[in-house]
Length: 286
Ligand SMILES: [Zn+2]
Figure 1 (cartoon, rainbow, N blue to C red):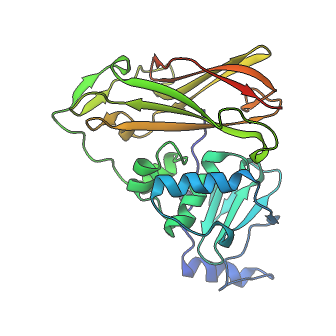
Figure 2 (figure 1 turned 90 degrees about the vertical axis):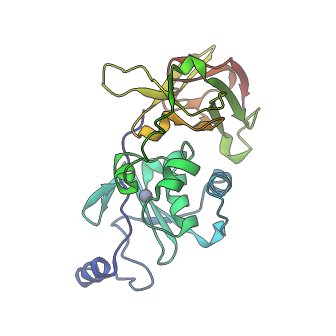
């Protein structure tokens, strides 16, 4: 499960000027001041793939090499413009600044990459919650910034997840450490096979939030499960024939709950609501 991400809506000119007055190393107007401890990083190999994924979902292409990445080592979030955030993008200098613990979190990194591609500090709903839903994280703050979801089609039929088609794919199909650092994605897709709009009725959970996309990965050395919480109504409304998908990032490693799998063969099952896909198999690494 993921915690809601906070992402600022971009530094305003006035804010940047105010910050500059108090700092000794001021880079404005080239770029707003970096948070304390921020260091330039060489983008991990998998970033090129994550950039391409974000280009693909958004329909916007841009030069990856123009972005400068920074991390703040050893933190899960940091303060930016008075808010705790996991990361931010700024057009000045085309910088992406990430909490160190989020540097290899695909959903968070792709969230900032989407800002860099669309050149917008805010969170337009058509990108963050429609075209790139399931590719980039969009937590509570992002959803609030995106504004209300459009009302559901009044002619939509309410159905159970079992009436939808759920499939699971793994890419690359045989991940190895020497390819993009061993990263791979489990893509869970759900399709409305009907020629009419539907609303999926997800089972409520004890936490009062329903689970949408889920994964269940099992191997000889153990397994791990995880899920997305349905935070935005758009995750349950389907146009005729619509496909929604969620990418879960994994890598080779030794931390099952952290989605770092020791080399071996695994059975992977995705689900949407209570409806599970057929099992897929993957041989991971070394
Ligand atoms: Zn953001």
